[in-house]
Image (cartoon, rainbow, N blue to C red; front, side):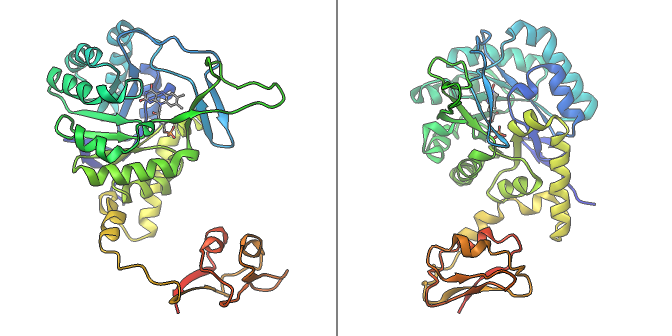
Amino acid sequence: MINLSTTVFGQLFKNPVLPAAGPNVGTGEKTRLAAQGGAGGLVTKTVSLHPAVVPKPNMARFRKDSMINAELWSELTLDDWLTNEYNIALAAAKEFGLPLIASIGYSPEELATLGPFLQEKGINLIEFSIHHIGDESIIEAAAALRKAVSIPIIAKLSPNIGQLGRTAALLDPYVDGFACINSFGPTLSIDIEKIESPLGSDDGMGWLSGPAIKPIALQAVYEVSQATHKPVIGIGGIATGKDVIEFMMAGASLVGLCTAAILQGPYVYGTIAEQAAQWLEEHGYSDINEIKGLFTQKMKNKPAPSTSDTLCMVVNVDKCKACGRCEIVCQYDALTAKPKEKAFIDPVHCAVCGLCRTVCPFDAIELVVG
Ligand SMILES: Cc1cc2nc3c(=O)[nH]c(=O)nc-3n(C[C@H](O)[C@H](O)[C@H](O)COP(=O)(O)O)c2cc1C
């Protein structure tokens, strides 16, 4: 039996897969569905002092599994949340035995006003987003919320500010942890038949999320988790159990997902947690906490890079299925993969670029020290 539970911010999470703030947790009832769908802890949509007025339409799928959106924060009023939605979310948290993180935004004044209301309601942790404030107000916002509440606070970082590690180090004295990243942008998509953006925002632009931003998010988590010793919730493009493992190896203590939950429904949290458990079992681990920071540790002990003279790519003929994909991508004409014949790499022409190894569907190309 694999242990997926983990204690972070002094709270026990049943598994590390949480919702990330968005329409997937846009009401108390949707938050309850996330709990029912197997989330290991709960997060609610960002609430601000005034309800958002959103452009219409404001969400579009991008490629198969990503999205561009022009949503803002909650369109419900603070009063709706305080008198109704948080009660439903809190009841779900109690019923399923999960911590509840409430997301709020944005200005220092708004955070200082909203924070105490949430603390009084019995919310366990507050996440504050810096998405809609200028870089110069970020520290001020954290300091204002820190002063206003005694429960743990988490800073949710946006990738567009850049240098996330530096920002995390500056925020560190005020916060108990970090969540990164928010959606990436601004970005643009055009429906060429209609010659228009699928979004109704003034400039047609929106924010990119889902697997399209995963490498950006993973790098951010790696950078932030080294800049601070406080827990990091990794968010951005998580859609499978292996993604969870990857983010935790890069230093995340928990993960959050929004796009996958919007496109696949609330049971995706539990499905992804089960997939992560299965991966752990197959790889001889018994506890999710064992893999945390493994990549970071390995990078610290990494030997000096080998020179290209000592490295070469070879085909493992037992695994090669002669599909020919490696030959197509080889930019150095070093690979031959004739139909029905095993692939062959000519070491004289091979530049050890590594691309073939990553396109082989059968894991049949290996990097060896020659
Ligand atoms: C439609 C939509 C609405 C979102 N609304 C919020 C929000 O209210 N507050 C927030 O902090 N992040 C919001 N996000 C960002 C997500 O929480 C998340 O950080 C981002 O989408 C990357 O994760 P993902 O790839 O799993 O979606 C929203 C994302 C989407 C797609």
